[in-house]
Amino acid sequence: MWMLVSLGALAAVHGGVAGAVRGPAATARLILRADGSAMLRRDGDWVDAERSPGGWVSRWCCVVTVRELLSDRRVHCLVCSSLNTSDAYRRLLVTLRLARTHAADRGVTWL
Image 1 (tube, rainbow, N blue to C red):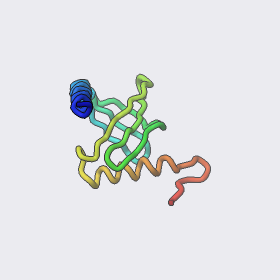
Image 2: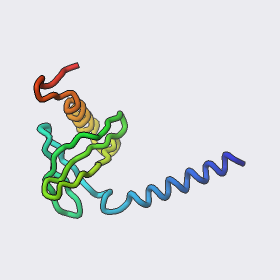
Image 3: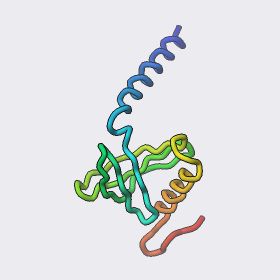
Image 4: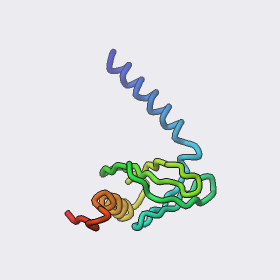
C-alpha cells in the first residue's frame, strides 16, 4: 500500500513540475561563447549576457548562470544533454570546467 501511495505522490509531483516548466522559460535559448559572453533568447528577443559563477555540471544536465547586461539580472539556465548533440554538450562541459579552473594571475590550469 505504501508503495502505491509513493508512486502516486511521485506522479503528482512530476506532473506539477512538468506543467510549471512548460511555458515561456521552457522556450529560452542560450548561446554561450568560450570568452564568457552569451546571448539569451527569451520571448522572441535576444539579450546580451555574460557567464556568472554559480552553476554546476553533470554528465546528464548542467545549470549555467548568466547575467543579463542591460538589466543586471541573473538567470539560471538548465541545459540537458538529451536536448543537444553529444559534441555540442561535450564542448559546453569543457568550457564550463575550464572556466572554473581559470585564475586571473595564473591563466588556465590543465588537469
